[in-house]
Structure formats: C-alpha cells, structure tokens
Length: 549
Image (cartoon, rainbow, N blue to C red; front, top):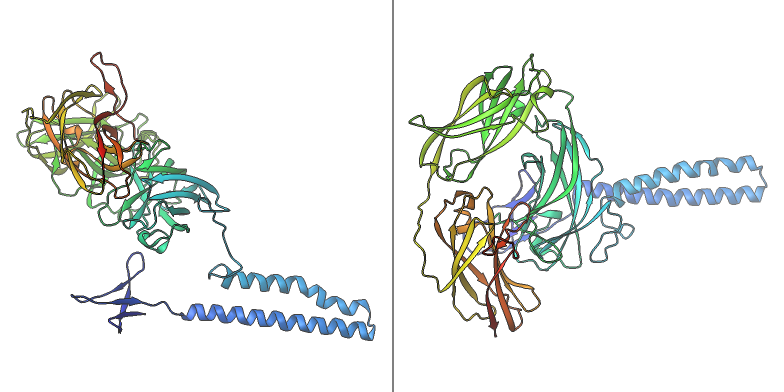
C-alpha cells in the first residue's frame, strides 16, 4: 500500500524487475510505502496453522489410543497401526511445514550464521574488495554446464565495507569469452532487493541471478564475471588487492561450459537489430548489431559490433576468416583487419549444417583516421588470404577526429617521466598548493605521446597518508575518457585535469601524491622507465605535503 501526504495512492509493478512504482506529482510530498499481508501469505499461514493443529490432534489421539491399549491389555498387533503411521504422517507434515512456511518466511527456526565476514554454508566463500565499499563474500553455483539458449541460476553474497554506503550500487554479472565478448548478462539493480545505501554493516545480502545464455552462443568454455557500478552514473568500482592496488573492474566467479542447444535458434530468435540474410559463400550473414548504434566513433577508439551467422549445407574443410574493411567515400582504405568469424577456438570447420553462431567483434579505429563517414564492409577469405565471397556492406560509420596540440605547457612543476616507453609526463599543476583536510583540490597533468599505444590505459591519482592509505582518489581514462591513449599520436600534448577531495576523517600529517597508468581490464600498471630504459617502479610521486585541519 502506498500513501502520498497520508492519502492512498495507486501502485504498479515496474518491468522488468517488478519494483514498486508510485506516480508522485511535482512539488514537495511525503511518500509512504506499507507492506501488508497478501492472499498467498494468508493462505500459507492458514495451512501452517492447520498443519500444526492437525499434528497436535493426531498426537493426542495416538497417546490416548496407546493408553487405552495398555489398560485393556490388547495384543501388540493392535498398537502397530498408530506407530506404523507415525513416520509417513510426520514426514509429510514436516515437508509441508517447510515448503509453505520455513523456506519462505522469516521465522525463529531458520537462520544462516554470519560472523561479519563469511556466511555459513556458502558453497564457495570469497573475499573480493570493490573500492572499500562492497565485498563479495560468497557464491552458490549449482550447475556450471548449460545449453546454449538456456538459463542458469546462481547466488552472490555481499556485505558493505563502509556502511552506510555513499550511493546505491548495482551488480553486473556477465558471461564472456576469452576476448571479452558478451554472451549473457544478468545485472541486479538493487542486490538483495534493497538499495545498498540502506544496508547495515552487520548484515549480508543474498543476491539471486538467473542468466540467459544468448541464442547462437557457440559451444565452449566461458567466464562468469561480476562487477559493481554506481546506479546513478554507471561508474564501475575497482577491485583492490591486499596492497590497495586496482586490479580491474570485474572478478571471475567461475567457468561455465556451454553445450550445443537441442535445436538451433531461428533468425527471429537471434533478433539482430539489422537483418541482412546475406549469403557469403557457404555461410549466411543473418544480420548484425552495432554497439553504439549510429553514434560517431572517435579516431583511436574501438568499434564493437555483433555478427549473426548461419552455416550452410556445405561447410568447407578449411578454415574461413572474416576480413573487415573501413573504406572512405573516395575509396581510400582506412583499415583492413582479418579475424575469425566467431570465437578463435570455434573455427568454421566445426560448424554444423544450419547452426546459428553469435559472434561479438571489435576492431580499432586507427588513431590517424581522418574525420568523415566510412563504409564498414565484410568479406570471407580462406587461410591463404584469397577471397571466398563478398564484400557485403554492413553500415556507414562516422569518424570524428579530436583537436590536437603539440605545444608544450608551462607547468608549475615540470617533470620528465616516461611510462612504458610510450607516454611522457611533462609536469603538473596543483590548485590550491596548500591542501586542507575535507576540501577539494585540482590536479592538472600534462602528457606527451612519444610512441603509438595499442592499449587503452587508465590514469590513477592518489593522495596517500603516511601509512600509504588512500585519502583522496580519482581513476579515469585521460580527459574523462574523451581521449583514450589508443587515439594519441606521437608528439601530441594533452592537458588532463582531475578533481579530488581529501576525506573529512583523514588525519593531519605528511601526505604524498602518486600518479601512474594501468590497464583497466587487468589492473597491470605501466612501468616507469629511467634514462637507460630500465624499469624503476610503476608510479611517480609528484609531491610530498603536510595537511593540517
């Protein structure tokens, strides 16, 4: 039941998660939600009460009959029916009691011990730290094998590390292959059915997931991974190791083995956003999805899409490959990339007649690609690189090129620090220079590209206390993700600004600012190289400061 300013209001279940939705008019209002009894719960309670009464009546009757038997000295045979009925009637009664009550409603007879860190009885205990906000403490996965197109269930156990939490966080659960291609997703908006900002520090949350393996998923081994992101912004939390170093944004829960389906999905069940049904030699390209739709793609950024294939009657004895090309309006070739049509470990020689195959793909737009529209096209080639069929046009892609500068800055604190032989930190500015606990500050970094970078790196900026505890932090790809390192050209200079805030409970004392770069997927840091090209750590200390209250 819902109320707005004390008056009854209508409620509805919101798709797809069944959350209660209440329409609130503009202005200041007091909204109340009350959970009452339901017909199902009343029926279950009634069954439980009747079962309990029946057990009591039965027990009294049996006791009376046994007493009469002893008094009249009847034969032992007359006492057997009550005792013979005892086991099945008791068993049935207890099973009914458990099914309708104990397993469905809070009660003093059902309890899972929790010592503040682990939950008793969890199949796989875990200890995964997500940015000191949430900890993943367990996993229940009844089955690690499922058919393509089917669903499987699992439970995740969470606890807050810093209750009350500063925001509401959601859980991502993805099924991916070795290259990171997505083959299933089961996110939880409010894990455990309650916003994380309302979690208590002495409780844990049991978060149930049912993940559908997407139609067309080829057979093979996949990884089930989980992550945490802010519900309002979508920003992911980082995993932290024992040394508080980021280790990517997802943790691997288990390996899931996917087997062939009982029947192959139809084109309608594959449901590509663009239906082609275009023949390419022995294969048919059913259609495709573009991850970003019609959105422009920046030079140096990845272009992700999913292809949907169907094998014909005559699958070739040799492997086929897909050649992806980006062609400008004037016919100039911007990119040509040869990749397996689907998973690397699932070549076309293993495809069955009529089989539908889902194939996520990613190609990298060259950093020096000119701005303008290009055509994405696809051909089939054999192992020797000879054309088998195609090309077939997929989509028009608009490439945007950033404004670039080679002008060196006048940094207040000049530096010459090289990361991984490809990126130079020219210096930094700090505003204000004197930091105050609980107050924000701005750190400006000046980068120079000295060699092409094939990997997108994340910048970490940390304010450390004397015990190396992080008291302010901002991790982000350069320029808030607008200029990934894969889009930098040698000689280019970039100004990268980070706003941080010192924690209000940080103690007064000595502090240091550290900066570096790491692979957002693996957490691997870029090494700092000296003049001889030798690695000398994986971070640079910008400043040593003293903070006072």
